[in-house]
Amino acid sequence: MRIDAHHHLWDLTARPQPWMDGLWADPIARTWTPTASTPPSS
Image (cartoon, rainbow, N blue to C red; front, side, top):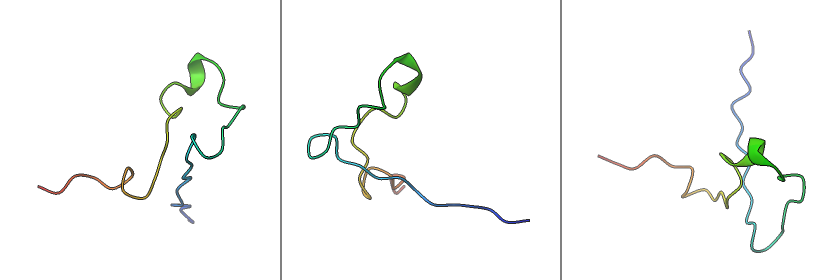
């Protein structure tokens, strides 16, 4: 079995993503950076 564990990062202020249009995209329609993808430390 192979697991693909890559991440997609984007900055919507630098490069808008028109394909993220509609209610289906609400959970991901924001800027994602390496620090935004890192869980908070406890």
